[in-house]
Length: 325
Ligand code: GLY
Image (cartoon, rainbow, N blue to C red; front, side, top):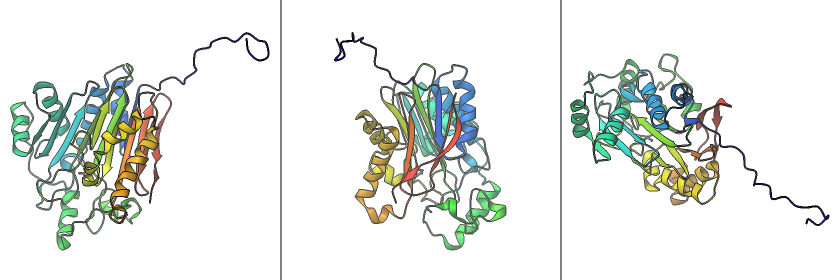
């Protein structure tokens, strides 16, 4: 009996229903990417198919700074990085891949047909060609070519932060600016399907004007992408070296395992980067994005300006993240 003499009923604990399916992706350019993934998710398709479809969509966009339309390295060569991970912790990645339009699909092929997880450079290209992918022309997009020639004048390697606030030069907009500095370069997306299974994909041309052969966080499982189907999934964007140093997305998922919300987990990962070297962190941008098994999501960044896109049955929105500095 309760204190008022009323019989107490053991009601089941009320918890909010899981929000699924859902897909979230980095930046406002994630909106059409989500729409593509949604075609699969809304038809009860698998999250791994949805995230691959989203990545393929953006890799096809020659005006986007992801895929072969992306910015080259300092030698004028576009090298692509991508990875994919499913609900069973199957994963595949390619790094430094040249002249192949869909690195995400090469990564998936590697995941599904070999015992390996990462292929790089010439080996990745050879694997792609052996598996029916076409060798594309070695050519920069018009925009990337203009930006690269501009950049060559000073050849200064300095990733920009808060580039969203920079005044854009009309003909070069929206992806780069009159001095050749490039806009953000990474598409990361994570999704949960009708079954509640999580997957993620990342695709990028990497940091613009990088040293030839440089690999960032994007194709590194646990850095640019991590999925744990019991807990959640996370992806990142920004200066990949800083993300790799803290195994960023694995860390975010572990924070969620310890009870943090997706947003707080992302915040704590950002704090880890800043704590290591606050002065350096003040000069760079990293953003994390996370989704948990309840369909709750959140993001956080070191600097102002990181946004992400969300698509579910309830919403189709762009969200700004909070930031540390
Ligand atoms: N986050 C992309 C890169 O560092 O290459």
